[in-house]
Length: 99
View 1 (cartoon, one colour):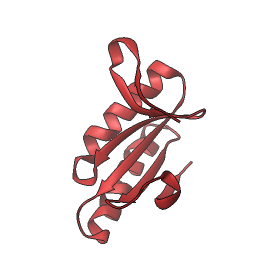
View 2: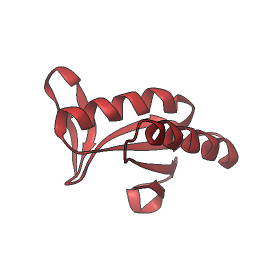
View 3: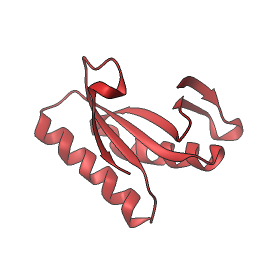
View 4: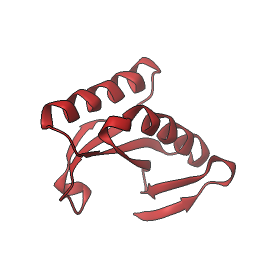
């Protein structure tokens, strides 16, 4: 995975893997993360990914994650959302939803 990838006029993706253009965002700013993930996916031709950094209670983070997934789904977009604790070091430490 490559971090801070320039995508021309669309800005910089926080991370890009072989399959995903990923935005990393606080869980309570999930709606901003959805927009950025979609922009990065459009610019890169990759699937959108959204890493939610959960700084609130687990139940609230789940609520934000489900809301993000609902928006992607309503737009007919296949996306992956990861719920990560503040102590998560890799995506393997996070709960993956979607795909």
